[in-house]
Length: 465
Image (tube, one colour):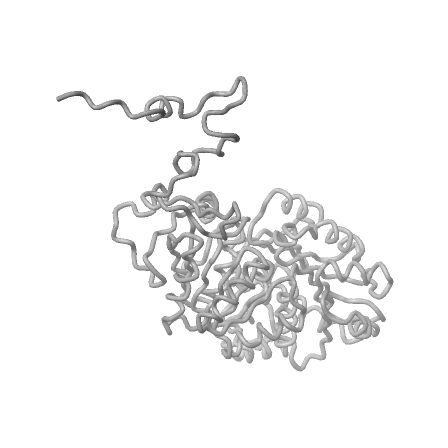
């Protein structure tokens, strides 16, 4: 460090980042280290493994990218064919693309080579890029496993390993691939594992891969950013389309991600939005990588205001200035809620997260509230203003019945309270009994017997006055 310039002792210079890397980081806007960066960068520069527990949007990428680049730059540019000095494993293609962009930005002018290995794009071009060897390889576990098996990638020279969003890789079934890939790396590697939550399976994975790690936890696991204003709007499934359209008519919702639970649901929401006069793009697992990247680029440059996505894309969307996140459906896994709403309120900015909840999703809402350790306030609309009714959610949950999605009557169609069954019963009174009225099988109860006795046969003669 240059002691003649006190400014050089500020920011990332104080953490041990120097030279061209410090200059590139400053030019890229990395001036004030975030808590996870301040706690983990010095330990990694010392050669220690890292176990990081942090919410999305906390600055994890720079937390592992800067120390890795610092050490690679010190080694020089010589690389062996088909090898990678550093390997970053991530669960989704979008996240892989964003991490490579950050590495390129931070290493500008340092002659660092990077490569992406992920599904949905040409395998030939990836193999060709890896042939001379690379400094940093960012990959999804599935495609990388295939290339290692076929001998197109050699990991024995990999001395830095990062597992980002480890809990998401667990959810997607990649953990066994992760273990195999980690075993193929250099025995003396340095490892960093980052996860927003720490379920028992991830704890076991960390114990098997990390050596005396420095644990960095910048927020209790499962918590959400304080800058995000969260609320829930009670709406039946068949009402959600209208509620969402009313919300999006407000120009204040300038950049919005709408999360759906399934791929088909995401497509349906997108079609409905377009029919209602809104331009929207959609990304999910059935879309090609080129289509997903095109949609994400349109959302990033502002040409598309609304992006509809499934949970698989929640971790990979890092777009500055997202004003709102709308949960059209509550997720199956409560932890996914944290990752969904983490797309807004990033880097200290304010954000709004609104959840549309059908009474049938009450158990999922309770699971989310247990994860985030707070009760979501009920709002009337996207402004977040509280519903003035006393205990509105308790009343709504008790009064509203879930929509009837079965029986061939059309999704979301419910019976009117005054509608009666053909068998004389009330809506919801079990299945109609077979046969003619009054017939029953031996040993069965005789339903509505009192009613038949009372109303069956001739009317009783009127009594004489």
